[in-house]
Length: 290
Image (cartoon, rainbow, N blue to C red; front, top):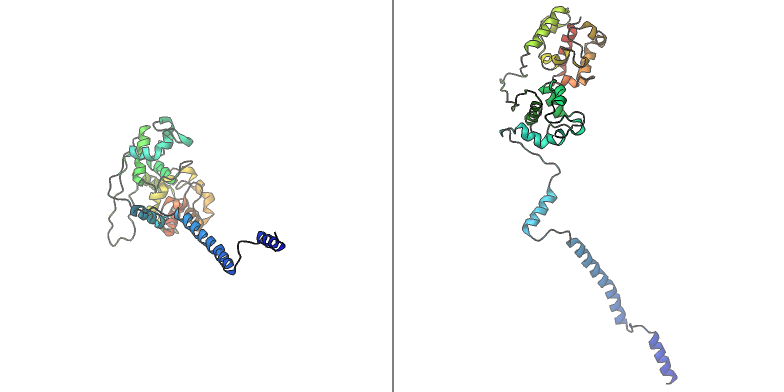
């Protein structure tokens, strides 16, 4: 082998596959194009896994799920029959009351229910709707308040109570000229207690409500239940000793306390009375101890 042949062979050993400018351009072109197509294919493959099925039903379902609103409003039929207490109890109450979970009185346990029954149906219903202790509010759920009341009566009656089965409250028709709801007539016991307190109280001339002898409707509706018997340390109507430390606040101060709530008394005494109505009640009660 000549020296030239050896040199040529040595050069070929060290040369690459690209020998012409055309081959160089082709190599550059494919080094960019092939990765781009590979990336596009990879993206298509990944995104295609998240697409809904090709069926029309699946597509409609997927679209409905995507555009579904966060909040859902359930409209109840006000004319449907109320569900019986046993059915509401089984669906809403049995989870705790069947086994006495978290201090809940067991169904049929007369001893556990006795002190609760003495508070009356309305108190039990209020506790159920608003919640008490470990029991959350039951009002505003799948059942109407009257249906929750039926469950309350069902449980209480199973422990010895004699509560009537609640019915749906009927709409009260009012005259067109009436601008305020008509107050319910006070019970005979409440009126007798009010009359007795008025006989022993001095009615000052500065209190126009007491001077006229009229009992505010809001008092008989929301206040008398506690202030007649002194429930939860509420000062009794006409009790000068009980009212003495409170009179220093004045009518305006006492009215503010009632509006905000104080101690066991809820805001506005648990009523929906206006500020003026509440002030009239305060003036009336204050007038019985002056």
